[in-house]
Length: 254
Ligand SMILES: *[C@@H]1O[C@H](CO)[C@@H](O)[C@H](O)[C@H]1NC(C)=O
Ligand SMILES: *[C@@H]1O[C@H](CO)[C@@H](O)[C@H](O)[C@H]1NC(C)=O
Image (cartoon, rainbow, N blue to C red; front, side, top):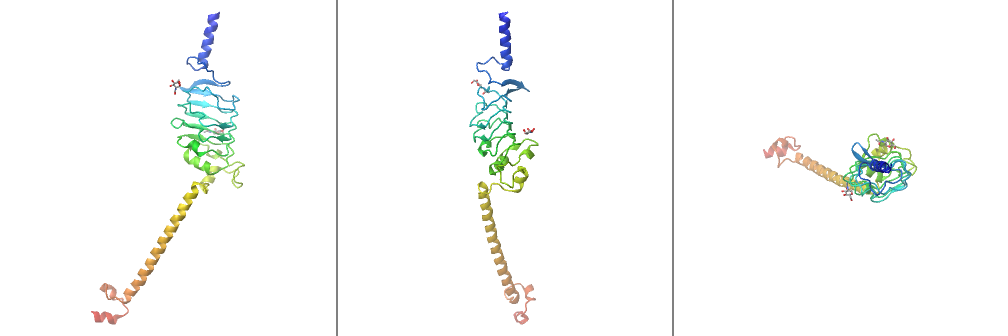
Protein backbone atom coordinates (compact mmCIF):
# COMPACT_ATOMS: atom_id res chain seq x y z
CA UNK A 1 0.00 0.00 0.00
CA UNK A 2 2.71 2.49 0.99
CA UNK A 3 5.00 1.97 -2.04
CA UNK A 4 1.97 2.49 -4.31
CA UNK A 5 1.13 5.78 -2.60
CA UNK A 6 4.76 6.83 -2.96
CA UNK A 7 4.74 5.99 -6.66
CA UNK A 8 1.52 7.92 -7.14
CA UNK A 9 2.95 10.96 -5.37
CA UNK A 10 6.08 10.81 -7.53
CA UNK A 11 3.94 10.47 -10.66
CA UNK A 12 1.86 13.50 -9.69
CA UNK A 13 5.00 15.57 -9.02
CA UNK A 14 6.45 14.63 -12.40
CA UNK A 15 3.23 15.62 -14.16
CA UNK A 16 3.00 18.82 -12.14
CA UNK A 17 6.44 20.10 -13.10
CA UNK A 18 6.22 19.14 -16.74
CA UNK A 19 8.29 15.98 -16.98
CA UNK A 20 11.37 17.22 -15.16
CA UNK A 21 12.53 15.98 -11.84
CA UNK A 22 10.46 17.54 -9.09
CA UNK A 23 12.07 20.80 -8.02
CA UNK A 24 12.06 22.07 -4.46
CA UNK A 25 10.36 25.28 -5.49
CA UNK A 26 6.68 24.66 -6.19
CA UNK A 27 4.99 26.97 -8.71
CA UNK A 28 3.00 29.82 -7.13
CA UNK A 29 -0.60 29.08 -6.21
CA UNK A 30 -2.88 28.98 -9.23
CA UNK A 31 0.02 28.56 -11.64
CA UNK A 32 1.17 25.51 -13.54
CA UNK A 33 3.79 24.43 -15.99
CA UNK A 34 2.77 22.87 -19.30
CA UNK A 35 4.28 21.84 -22.57
CA UNK A 36 2.44 23.52 -25.44
CA UNK A 37 3.49 22.82 -29.03
CA UNK A 38 6.89 21.83 -27.69
CA UNK A 39 7.33 25.09 -25.77
CA UNK A 40 7.70 25.22 -22.02
CA UNK A 41 4.72 27.27 -20.90
CA UNK A 42 3.91 28.79 -17.54
CA UNK A 43 0.27 29.59 -16.98
CA UNK A 44 -0.91 31.88 -14.20
CA UNK A 45 -4.16 33.09 -15.71
CA UNK A 46 -6.82 34.19 -13.21
CA UNK A 47 -4.59 33.34 -10.28
CA UNK A 48 -5.41 36.43 -8.25
CA UNK A 49 -1.83 37.71 -8.54
CA UNK A 50 -1.05 41.29 -7.58
CA UNK A 51 2.64 41.01 -8.45
CA UNK A 52 4.72 39.10 -10.99
CA UNK A 53 5.27 35.76 -9.23
CA UNK A 54 8.66 34.37 -8.31
CA UNK A 55 9.67 30.81 -9.09
CA UNK A 56 8.93 30.90 -12.82
CA UNK A 57 11.18 28.22 -14.42
CA UNK A 58 14.02 29.81 -16.37
CA UNK A 59 13.31 27.71 -19.47
CA UNK A 60 9.81 29.21 -19.86
CA UNK A 61 9.09 30.27 -23.45
CA UNK A 62 5.47 31.34 -22.99
CA UNK A 63 4.23 33.11 -19.89
CA UNK A 64 0.56 33.81 -19.24
CA UNK A 65 -0.12 36.30 -16.46
CA UNK A 66 -3.43 37.49 -17.87
CA UNK A 67 -6.58 38.18 -15.88
CA UNK A 68 -4.86 38.99 -12.61
CA UNK A 69 -4.55 42.18 -10.56
CA UNK A 70 -1.10 43.33 -11.67
CA UNK A 71 -0.91 47.12 -11.38
CA UNK A 72 2.66 47.67 -12.53
CA UNK A 73 5.62 45.91 -14.07
CA UNK A 74 8.85 46.74 -12.23
CA UNK A 75 12.32 46.97 -13.77
CA UNK A 76 13.82 43.65 -14.75
CA UNK A 77 10.65 41.72 -13.88
CA UNK A 78 11.43 39.02 -16.45
CA UNK A 79 15.20 39.26 -16.83
CA UNK A 80 15.73 35.82 -15.28
CA UNK A 81 13.81 34.25 -18.19
CA UNK A 82 16.44 34.12 -20.94
CA UNK A 83 14.33 32.26 -23.51
CA UNK A 84 10.98 34.00 -23.04
CA UNK A 85 9.23 34.50 -26.40
CA UNK A 86 5.65 35.25 -25.51
CA UNK A 87 4.30 37.29 -22.62
CA UNK A 88 0.61 37.82 -21.91
CA UNK A 89 -0.14 40.61 -19.43
CA UNK A 90 -3.63 41.33 -20.73
CA UNK A 91 -6.71 41.87 -18.57
CA UNK A 92 -4.86 43.22 -15.56
CA UNK A 93 -5.00 46.71 -14.04
CA UNK A 94 -1.58 47.80 -15.32
CA UNK A 95 -1.21 51.56 -15.11
CA UNK A 96 2.56 51.77 -14.99
CA UNK A 97 5.40 50.09 -16.85
CA UNK A 98 8.98 50.61 -15.81
CA UNK A 99 11.28 51.81 -18.59
CA UNK A 100 13.26 48.63 -17.87
CA UNK A 101 10.22 46.33 -17.56
CA UNK A 102 11.34 44.07 -20.41
CA UNK A 103 15.04 44.35 -19.78
CA UNK A 104 16.96 41.25 -20.80
CA UNK A 105 14.33 40.11 -23.32
CA UNK A 106 15.66 41.94 -26.38
CA UNK A 107 16.97 38.85 -28.10
CA UNK A 108 14.03 36.54 -27.51
CA UNK A 109 10.67 38.24 -26.87
CA UNK A 110 8.41 38.18 -29.96
CA UNK A 111 4.86 38.66 -28.68
CA UNK A 112 3.64 40.95 -25.93
CA UNK A 113 0.02 41.40 -24.94
CA UNK A 114 -0.70 44.54 -22.93
CA UNK A 115 -4.35 44.79 -23.94
CA UNK A 116 -7.26 45.44 -21.59
CA UNK A 117 -5.30 47.29 -18.92
CA UNK A 118 -5.29 50.84 -17.50
CA UNK A 119 -2.32 52.16 -19.46
CA UNK A 120 -2.54 55.84 -20.40
CA UNK A 121 1.08 56.03 -21.43
CA UNK A 122 4.13 53.79 -21.65
CA UNK A 123 7.80 54.77 -21.59
CA UNK A 124 9.53 54.49 -24.97
CA UNK A 125 12.65 53.06 -23.28
CA UNK A 126 10.70 49.94 -22.34
CA UNK A 127 10.44 49.01 -26.04
CA UNK A 128 13.79 50.12 -27.40
CA UNK A 129 15.72 47.18 -28.87
CA UNK A 130 12.76 44.78 -28.79
CA UNK A 131 11.68 43.08 -32.01
CA UNK A 132 8.11 42.49 -30.91
CA UNK A 133 4.55 42.38 -31.98
CA UNK A 134 2.28 43.98 -29.38
CA UNK A 135 -1.39 44.18 -28.61
CA UNK A 136 -2.13 47.60 -27.10
CA UNK A 137 -5.93 47.48 -27.46
CA UNK A 138 -8.42 48.43 -24.81
CA UNK A 139 -6.36 50.84 -22.70
CA UNK A 140 -7.28 54.47 -21.80
CA UNK A 141 -4.43 55.95 -23.87
CA UNK A 142 -3.63 59.61 -23.38
CA UNK A 143 -2.52 59.59 -27.05
CA UNK A 144 0.70 61.47 -26.48
CA UNK A 145 4.07 61.74 -28.13
CA UNK A 146 5.40 58.71 -26.22
CA UNK A 147 2.74 56.45 -27.74
CA UNK A 148 3.50 57.78 -31.21
CA UNK A 149 7.20 57.04 -30.68
CA UNK A 150 6.44 53.56 -29.32
CA UNK A 151 4.38 52.76 -32.39
CA UNK A 152 7.37 53.68 -34.55
CA UNK A 153 9.37 51.17 -32.52
CA UNK A 154 7.10 48.10 -32.43
CA UNK A 155 4.79 46.21 -34.75
CA UNK A 156 1.13 45.86 -33.86
CA UNK A 157 -0.47 42.43 -33.71
CA UNK A 158 -2.64 41.97 -36.83
CA UNK A 159 -6.04 43.61 -36.51
CA UNK A 160 -5.31 45.39 -33.23
CA UNK A 161 -4.73 48.89 -34.61
CA UNK A 162 -8.34 50.00 -34.33
CA UNK A 163 -8.39 48.97 -30.65
CA UNK A 164 -6.00 51.77 -29.68
CA UNK A 165 -8.40 54.51 -28.64
CA UNK A 166 -7.73 57.74 -26.73
CA UNK A 167 -9.05 57.66 -23.16
CA UNK A 168 -10.32 60.35 -20.76
CA UNK A 169 -6.78 61.57 -19.99
CA UNK A 170 -6.22 62.63 -23.59
CA UNK A 171 -6.63 66.13 -25.04
CA UNK A 172 -10.42 66.79 -25.02
CA UNK A 173 -10.73 66.80 -28.81
CA UNK A 174 -8.99 63.41 -29.05
CA UNK A 175 -11.02 61.44 -26.49
CA UNK A 176 -12.70 58.45 -28.12
CA UNK A 177 -10.68 58.74 -31.33
CA UNK A 178 -8.65 55.93 -32.85
CA UNK A 179 -5.03 56.69 -32.33
CA UNK A 180 -3.72 55.43 -35.66
CA UNK A 181 -6.03 57.66 -37.70
CA UNK A 182 -5.06 60.58 -35.53
CA UNK A 183 -1.32 59.89 -35.57
CA UNK A 184 -1.44 59.71 -39.36
CA UNK A 185 -2.73 63.26 -39.51
CA UNK A 186 -1.00 64.96 -36.65
CA UNK A 187 2.52 65.14 -35.28
CA UNK A 188 2.05 64.66 -31.54
CA UNK A 189 5.71 65.16 -30.72
CA UNK A 190 5.61 68.93 -31.27
CA UNK A 191 7.58 69.99 -28.21
CA UNK A 192 9.93 67.07 -27.68
CA UNK A 193 12.13 65.61 -30.37
CA UNK A 194 9.52 66.65 -32.91
CA UNK A 195 10.29 70.26 -31.97
CA UNK A 196 13.83 69.75 -33.19
CA UNK A 197 12.44 68.30 -36.42
CA UNK A 198 10.22 71.34 -36.84
CA UNK A 199 13.04 73.85 -36.32
CA UNK A 200 15.12 71.95 -38.89
CA UNK A 201 12.22 72.43 -41.30
CA UNK A 202 12.17 76.16 -40.58
CA UNK A 203 15.94 76.41 -41.16
CA UNK A 204 15.51 74.59 -44.48
CA UNK A 205 12.74 76.99 -45.51
CA UNK A 206 14.92 80.00 -44.66
CA UNK A 207 17.82 78.61 -46.69
CA UNK A 208 15.56 77.84 -49.63
CA UNK A 209 14.05 81.32 -49.38
CA UNK A 210 17.55 82.80 -49.42
CA UNK A 211 18.41 80.82 -52.54
CA UNK A 212 15.24 81.94 -54.27
CA UNK A 213 16.04 85.60 -53.55
CA UNK A 214 19.60 85.11 -54.86
CA UNK A 215 18.45 83.36 -58.01
CA UNK A 216 15.74 85.99 -58.55
CA UNK A 217 18.21 88.83 -58.13
CA UNK A 218 20.66 87.18 -60.52
CA UNK A 219 17.91 86.62 -63.10
CA UNK A 220 16.78 90.25 -62.86
CA UNK A 221 20.36 91.45 -63.21
CA UNK A 222 20.97 89.10 -66.16
CA UNK A 223 17.84 90.27 -67.95
CA UNK A 224 18.67 93.89 -67.33
CA UNK A 225 22.18 93.36 -68.67
CA UNK A 226 20.87 91.39 -71.63
CA UNK A 227 18.50 94.19 -72.53
CA UNK A 228 21.48 96.51 -72.55
CA UNK A 229 23.39 94.13 -74.79
CA UNK A 230 20.55 93.93 -77.30
CA UNK A 231 20.58 97.69 -77.48
CA UNK A 232 24.35 97.91 -77.76
CA UNK A 233 25.58 94.79 -79.51
CA UNK A 234 29.15 95.91 -80.03
CA UNK A 235 31.02 93.17 -78.25
CA UNK A 236 28.79 90.15 -78.99
CA UNK A 237 27.51 87.69 -81.58
CA UNK A 238 26.58 89.18 -84.99
CA UNK A 239 23.20 87.31 -85.08
CA UNK A 240 22.00 89.47 -82.23
CA UNK A 241 23.21 92.65 -83.78
CA UNK A 242 20.37 92.48 -86.32
CA UNK A 243 17.87 93.09 -83.52
CA UNK A 244 19.72 96.16 -82.33
CA UNK A 245 17.69 99.35 -82.24
CA UNK A 246 20.60 101.48 -83.26
CA UNK A 247 21.20 100.28 -86.83
CA UNK A 248 23.56 103.13 -87.64
CA UNK A 249 26.13 101.78 -85.23
CA UNK A 250 25.80 98.40 -86.90
CA UNK A 251 26.37 99.77 -90.41
CA UNK A 252 29.42 101.77 -89.34
CA UNK A 253 30.82 98.72 -87.64
CA UNK A 254 30.38 96.48 -90.65
C1 LIG B 1 18.40 27.65 -15.81
O1 LIG B 1 19.14 27.61 -14.61
C2 LIG B 1 19.97 26.49 -14.51
C3 LIG B 1 20.57 26.47 -13.11
O2 LIG B 1 20.86 27.76 -12.66
C4 LIG B 1 21.03 26.52 -15.58
O3 LIG B 1 21.87 25.41 -15.52
C5 LIG B 1 20.33 26.54 -16.95
O4 LIG B 1 21.28 26.66 -17.99
C6 LIG B 1 19.33 27.67 -17.01
N1 LIG B 1 18.56 27.55 -18.23
C7 LIG B 1 18.45 28.52 -19.14
C8 LIG B 1 17.59 28.25 -20.32
O5 LIG B 1 19.03 29.58 -19.00
C1 LIG C 1 -5.87 42.02 -28.66
O1 LIG C 1 -6.51 42.34 -27.44
C2 LIG C 1 -7.93 42.33 -27.50
C3 LIG C 1 -8.45 42.76 -26.13
O2 LIG C 1 -7.87 42.00 -25.11
C4 LIG C 1 -8.41 40.96 -27.91
O3 LIG C 1 -9.82 40.95 -27.99
C5 LIG C 1 -7.80 40.58 -29.24
O4 LIG C 1 -8.16 39.25 -29.59
C6 LIG C 1 -6.29 40.67 -29.18
N1 LIG C 1 -5.78 40.44 -30.53
C7 LIG C 1 -4.65 39.76 -30.76
C8 LIG C 1 -4.27 39.57 -32.20
O5 LIG C 1 -3.95 39.30 -29.88
